[in-house]
Image (tube, rainbow, N blue to C red; front, side, top):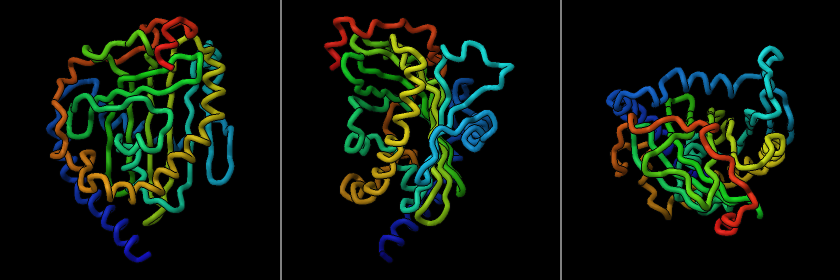
Length: 291
């Protein structure tokens, strides 16, 4: 027990020690309007903490699921849009630092996320921003999905924030065997409660595209969210042991000098809008290729 506390304490110290280094690199990042700035992180945090215009759909065993319900004045075609939803989970046995590592570590995700098909980083945009590709399984006969996202993160002694949104990459256009989904805004806000506990928020507004009715998508997100959060929690519990056997010193999201991805000019990217993607027939012959 004592040695475990020392490891957790040391891990948090490493996170803190690298704050100044990350901030230094961040000041040197290439200028582009597409890169999130401080206001983006602050707004994301506010959305995670807000309750006004949010309706609670699930509240059990320290876990909550909320759906954004816009004021009547701005409710237009609400049934035809994907809702913004968020989950809040009280984690009593895993540190904020460890949960932050879990959602960053793509190699580890291969061991705990059965829906993942393929995941890899494409390029870095700055010390705290990169481009990545992710595809996942969908139940037959629905086609599998994929996304290309810009991910950016911010760390200080009191909180961890990760945000991502879909972008167009000139070398990664939509594939014929998959449906290109759109992350309008997705991310995590993690707040320490103690040395080995934290509050974990997951917020997302994502459109899977294709032929799925939006009301089905919205309902599915609400139903599946608690199980997804439980999986992330279990992944957090097992991460320290796994990491000790898998490049324990390698954490490029904390140590920018470890990142060997090629640099990319953010000006080459543009935000991926959902309405610019074709609605694919889910029952087309191509769907067999992605099963």
